Length: 484
Ligand code: URA
Image (cartoon, rainbow, N blue to C red; front, side, top):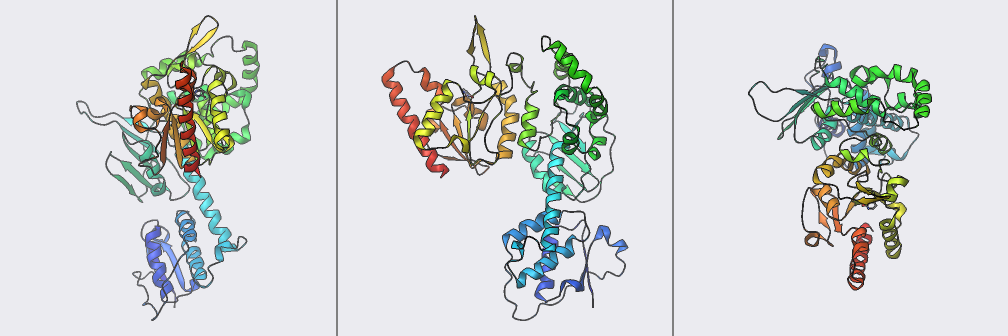
């Protein structure tokens, strides 16, 4: 006898797991079950009403390794109809041999891992390539801004990705439609549906803004077509307004490089003013996330989110291992950092390095970044005098910091100084009130607040300076213990 089971909709993990447990506790071997989702059950001809067998008596409790649940959670989102049978076969085998997942050349294990990887890739592409359009509110109606977007994923990932967009875009209403389901957020409830959506017509004037933005960050001198099409595969182009430009930008790249060399940065690029004008007048559509640290860094190179970039030499992005356990956040790059393009390499960086060495923390193990990524200063003669970034600038630059946190996922975040504390928490508290003790954050991370090394360098009184240095070292020792 063959059992037939049709999962509702696309078939989610909970539903599959309940049915799989029932089959397993009845000892039904994999070859005796025909798994389908309603979507590919072909009118469900021959499918009974998902009746499940009775369990065999005296079955031992089933313990499934957490690694399998994780793998199955990803693989079940794959669009291959064979995924349910594959996962049941693995579950059946696991009940007899718990070492299955360690057999890296086993055909089932390889297949499930391949599916999970492909789902992961699709997830990242979706976070990077969703383009939102603002939907104007009806005349006279006040309310939260509303955004809508269309995306075509390869797999059933909408449920999986929706919490990412909820975290990132909490203060606006949005709807993401795809042929494999939809997700929406209204400030209170995140809703998802498996029903396929129809592609809406979303062309409007913000497309032009995207194209201007893309043209501004496109650097013909760094063009690597193969790499570019790998990062932004052609299948996504049709829903990306800026992709229209790609063929002509590639075709003109060589001529543009020659022209750039001729002009040698002596005048602003021609799109510069246009971009600023368009950006000043246009509604700000939420930009997508870059998806990886190198992509984010590359994107930040052409950041114009506030005016500080106008005078700075370059964006000084964070640096360190992409999976660092500890992230240090400073205020903004100083004069030397602005020239070197690296954080904490000037006098404050030297004090920071010396203290790290003293307490035994390896700087190479840390991800080090700043609340603001450009150097804000006042020219005075030949000198450039540091100016504190204002709250608006810090808020604009939080766009990058939030994504660095999202990608690096540090367990411990160290705020050095009030600007970093504000960037990380939106709190304007006295440092002394929160300094020196770990604080558990809502997102599960631990925050530790200390002073900024530049503050120590500026203390005029030698005795106080010595005391404060000791306190700073004490803080760093605590950080070292927390990190361990
Ligand atoms: N001060 C900072 O906050 N960051 C740097 O990178 C250098 C000095």
